[in-house]
Image (spheres, rainbow, N blue to C red):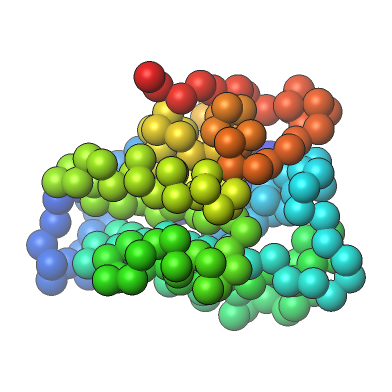
Length: 206
């Protein structure tokens, strides 16, 4: 089952004083960020992932990777936190595990590996990041997640080609789950063959 789109968001150049209301008329159809719909897709894909299964009452920590210096990225984090706050613990859960959102600031002076380890992050959601001046930043994030066996997901399609494991991509008037199979295995994810038949498979560039 695919879920309908509620709003869309992109990441162009903008003034640091730009507000959400100022920015809305400039939106273009590039990145679709809808945490409510993405949460439902996440719940569905966790049914088919073999390695994370938890006992009743256990917590599954989902890190939201963002940049405090980026308004777009910070807005995406804010939307996830607001969603978590608006839902009951039963609604914000999957497969008997309570889901917990934890902000992960890529601008932090602390090493990403330490942050993920301290927070016990099992899945890392990548918001739209400002990478133009730091082309090595995304590969470094992927390498860290592979080392820690942290699964990655995003709503930014091109990040899949860079090594993110799972994407929630808006195509042909519906959300689709796209999987980078090589990346998902490197990050410790193990999906059933039934799940793979329902998804679009993409490879890492290079």
